[in-house]
Image (cartoon, rainbow, N blue to C red; front, side):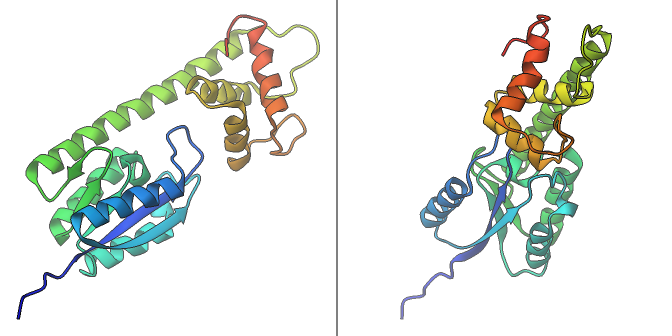
Length: 220
């Protein structure tokens, strides 16, 4: 009898959010399924709707997947993009350390990285470093925008929105988001609009951005 190789069991982790780097869950699933077919994996898809879950500890389905990996039920965890797994250096390095100690791999399709190899683990760490640097730059831009708003003397009717809210809208716009995507993000984060409720629309976002455009501080 011809020996049949047992397919490698992998978890394909799909995370849904509304940030600028987001790709739809359907695209993520398709990419993972294509890779599974190419590599001969037996793929189990885990989809988590976690808009604001920046850390692994806040994602229950990810925690369950990690428990299954630790128990040896799967050989590895695959994601279409590194940011679907983690943008936090501490979380990312902990995941790599756990995978190496427990004997499973991390595969990031966008980087062409498989941490089962020494080179793959090194590239994974480098990508985490760059992601951390990007996150810090975004935070600095937000802080600088807020500082500029505080320096601006407002003339006429008092602004209905806090300076921090406008700074957040500006920062999101500068990352390349559309007005609709900004409204969705602010609503998802529970940020109150001028009405006092998180009911942002394209018109309200546009109005918030225009409050700075007239002073030449923001150009959309």
